[in-house]
Length: 466
Image 1 (cartoon, rainbow, N blue to C red):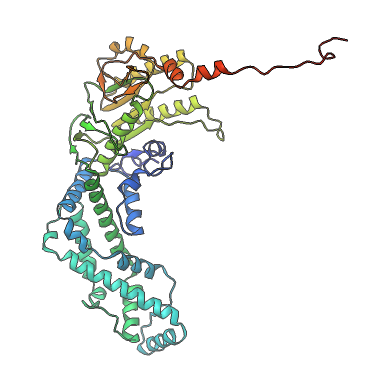
Image 2 (image 1 turned 180 degrees about the vertical axis):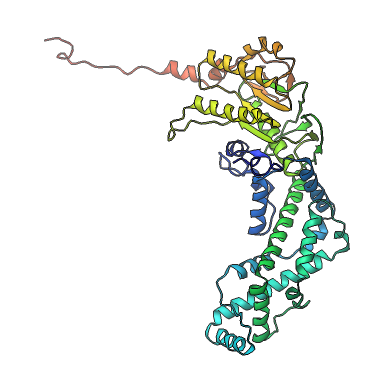
């Protein structure tokens, strides 16, 4: 997926990054970020929220418009309880999608004969028409009352245009014939005339009303998710690319340890070290998830968050080989770096996260490749990079990289019999090497030492004995 080529106001985020951040699927079978944010009531509302999450914004103005709408909904949440019920909305959706006979006769006599035929010979269709028309009327009446609320006249951000479009559509002559009372008592003639006006003449209008309602439902869901999870609305900045955060954490964790983030044009690269299980990958995912949510116009899991919007967001966390295409693990890594390089070469504002890259080759190649990539990253203006690595030997060379590298690490506390992790980010580079200790703690060597080789018995003939 590449949004930037078609829509420059959309964030360029590909399928691999969606997978790394578990936006729509989770490798461990748990909830995705979409599930985490989805508070919609209808199928159509969920589809609109999914579409929003597939296409985050890349420009400050679009993000600000969504933020303003979400803030207003949060502050005026009671108003949005007056939106049409899910029963009326989904009843209208079914009404428009169901295959039903329609009466579109200009002649009054032909319409009367057709109405009688529908009523007399197609009673199941007739009752579906009545049920659907009643649902559409309920939705129209609810929308009329909703858009007329005085507090919504000055609704900010995305809400303003949405409400204006709703008011314009509701003022169409055929929709004005919908009364402000329940039409359950209407006879066959009036119901079929109403059906003709709604489903034949104004079908496109009803579909547009539904779409606008779903857009608002998605925005309400975003506001509700913010409130439920305690997210903080980020501050949109301008100028050279930078991202700064305090108290950042991953939203999935029950008891997260919060950490800061600082990436700017003085330190374009965050070089992250530390032993396995200390928190490097979680930190990368927490940061990328927060930045992604910020580009949606939502709040983020942090105490504060300031950012200049980027055009491209890449992650390289959970790469795999591809046997069907004959792509080895290392070639998959190379192709991932190539995708980043192409975006950088275009002059896009790029933010990239690379978790222990070049694991698919030998140590010498991995060292040389990492250093070569870091050297080139350090010179790219208006781009930012997070780079985690076990190759602590790189630290001897980082001073050459134009002072662009900010070194941070996580560590394990080695007191006692078992390792302890506090998940706190520290300045500097870790020199901990804990692989052998972890193997010992798990008792692996002890198990192997206890194992005895099976005895092999030889027959005299096999042993050359007569």
